[in-house]
Amino acid sequence: MLANSTYATIDTKPSPHAAWRPVKIAAMTSSHHQVLARKWRPKSFADLVGQSHVVRALSNALESGRLHHAYLFTGTRGVGKTTLARILARCLNCQGSDNTGGVTATPCGVCSACQQIDAGRFVDLIEIDAASYTGVDNMREILENAMYAPTSGRYKVYIIDEVHMLSKNAFNAMLKTLEEPPGHVVFILATTDPQKVPVTVLSRCLQFNLKQMPADLVARHLKTVLDAEQIPCEAEALNALARAASGSMRDALSLTDQAIAYGQGTIKTEETRAMLGAVDSAYLLPLLEALAENDGLRLMAEAETIAARSLSFDAALQDLALLLHQIALVQAVPDALDDDLADRDRILALAAAIDAETVQLYYQIATLGRRDLEWAPDPVAGFRMSLLRMLAFVPDSGQHLPPPKAAAPQQMAPPAPPLRSTPSSTPPFAHPEPTPPPRVEEGQDARTAFTATPAPTTVNATAATPATFNGDWFTLSQRFSGAVKQLASQCELVSHDALSITLRLPETAKPLLSSMGAKLTAALRDLLGAALKVDLQIGATQGAAPAAVLTHQKNARQTAAEAAIHADPAVQTLMRDFGATVHDISPLKG
Image 1 (cartoon, helix red, strand yellow):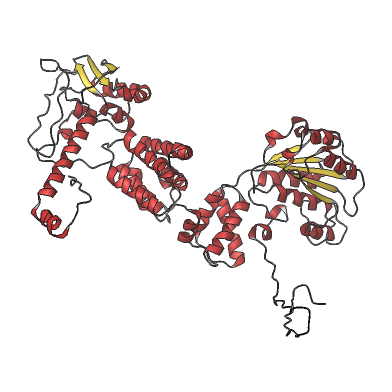
Image 2: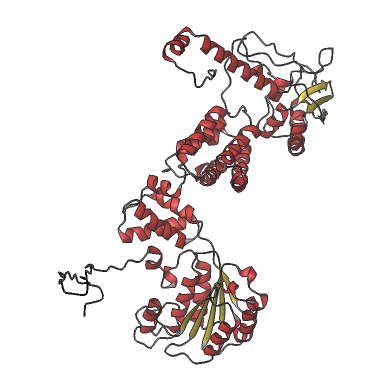
């Protein structure tokens, strides 16, 4: 007879008189391969990663002999519930290397009980899948068997996995035994959904909740495993695998197996990201840089680049939120960013270019956009809308761009006049010596003409120095930033006098008014005096709001740029003689 691991090759020539056909058996040598999740399954409390609170409680109980007859382990998939149950079974039945040991928190791993438990052959360890044995008859059979003494071990241990799948009658059948089991029986229940376990069962068990593992801890453990396996890997690739595992060590090891196969024995960052459909921060930083510059055209171009690479938009929004978290962390704690981070300089530049309030708004839009992605018409549209929300709710502010350069009169039209103003010269607001309004010289940008005293950094109406208001609402609105500027840019000036100012917004700006109206009022009183009465109305507008003026100016520049390109003789020659077409025309910034 041949050995189990070897097969012979038999190749015979058929006889013309034979009634049977030749037999050919391929020779091969079998090789047993274990996946990383099974090969590196912890066999003792010391090997267990990320559940120190449970390990400490169980170790102390085992060492002091304060054992419970029923344990319940809860937590999401892959955090170690079944593994912890098997380790506990080893601790209860370990005989020691000299077969004289007792219950211990550090099983020897060499005695017959430890080895049989590792191999799954220990007769007194009964593992039950509650999803397969849900009925009351199955439970009665188990409980009848529990009455008998252990065959070879110290305790008869029952591990019931996914216990919440048991039927109501099965739970009722086990209640009495679970409350007062024989002294040689220990029940270990495990579930991912403790809400479905009856409270009568919960009250009879000692419950431990296993936590999801943080990504940095998972990445460190993957590094340890791969070093032992002598598999080359890159740190950023391990971080991507750890984030994709979402706190599950088993999922992380399974993804690592997949990455090893994908990379032909190595784990590299680019290949791992391609496998996961993840987005490199190098592709996300330009998105935030375009938002900081209020450049919608570039923003959509960067979104198209991500779409062309067939990357996951859910992962893109998740990584964008992580990047915004890094920026917010730098703004709060400047030394929190690692010095060896690849994109450290660009992140620091973004932290300086985007104000903290805007970063928080971007983060909220990214997280909500990821949640709403499944309801979008398609993932591309959902991703674009999240970016367009960031662009719409936080327009260009003084903290995002350097001061604009002077523009020619034909390139920058002056702002539209207010709807209604007082006929006489505007008196100062609570200022003993008013300063005359500045003149807008020819060629000077109207947005930089307002030269009143700058507002203080803190909103304190009594401490602020009031300024004069000459009726130029466009210029005044540009002094604000963030969401306050967004609201101000939607307002039209209706009227103003020495003690009051009336502004009107369209119906579409009503949600923004309800959330930011008080902040706009406080900002106006900071600039124009604490006694100023601010009236914010909702009604029909006439297109004189700063946002409408800027849109009109932008469209005018675009139209002028297109006309100039199409009128260029060289362009006309290329189009006439070579059939050239103009794909994109954008006016130069400046």
